[in-house]
Length: 433
Image 1 (tube, rainbow, N blue to C red):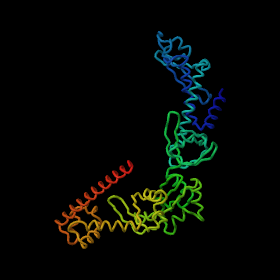
Image 2 (image 1 turned 90 degrees about the vertical axis):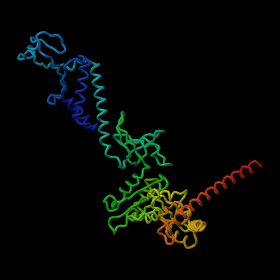
Image 3 (image 1 turned 180 degrees about the vertical axis):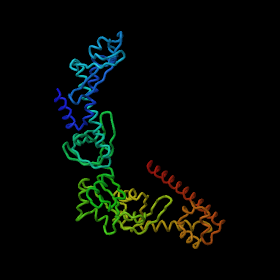
Image 4 (image 1 turned 120 degrees about the vertical axis):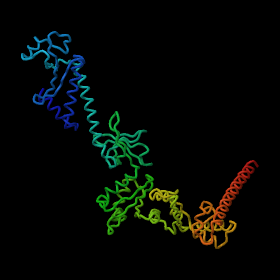
């Protein structure tokens, strides 16, 4: 028995990766449970593993008394001295139990406790192994596919890629190799829950970190990334070393580095953009390859009006607005792209709306325009104090101009509403006829 139990503990510890002390504690608890099943829960019991003899020993402790009232907890002095001649009244006497007499049911109970404890210990070790791996890329094999997502075999553990974390149009079969980003690791009653993702922007960042040594070394820094998984992505990079081009480092010789990432993402197009601390320049970079003519910044509303040549409009906006949408997320600014023709038209209309206000002539309209009030709408939202600094405008005139602009805006809104109502009625009449 000695070598068998020792060998079993060593083998299970090695094969299952469970610490030896955890296994010994589990065996002691299982034996304690088996003893209580046979002898009841009232006995004073102590169970310990004897490493020298390689066995689990169980001792029942009884108090030495003159007259026994509870045989489970007490022993007479006469009986006690048969076991230990030196015992005295009031002593606690440990009597070794024969563990072989625990019986088949008790042994089965011990086995169940051992199995359960081993499972718990294994689950805890898996959780400990993976809890610090959040944010890493991990490799696995597709085990099964169902409505809950893709179950991935990681070796000692299973993980799942929920439907929301899967890239549209990516397909897998059982046995396929798969790489994914460790999104979340949590404790659950049935074992550690490991959630993986192939859509998270950090998956893209980590792929570049693996492919580009300059990023891993900290020379090139990724300032941000955004994706529309399976379609297109943008990643902003900068370099601490002026001699190293961050975009070139990420692209690699003949595009080798970026192509490795594109292949892993199943053909997702990736725009690598040089970061610039100037928001306007950064947005211009983010909208590449479109050429930008002018950028108008509204700092208060974190809005940029980007003006492009007429033939660059569709390129700047991108298919279904994808290019400007990704650039907006990357730069964290709202972006309104306009063609030069539309911009000039809006400027003209805005200038005309100023000229339409009573008391405002060409010179005053020019001064207002130069001060940043390009339309009656913008003037209506101004404070009169802001206008006093403009040449030729007194406090009285400033109040008058702002009030006139507000009236103009209300009139325009009412006119637009009437026109809309009229067109709706006309459409209804046509439908009836």
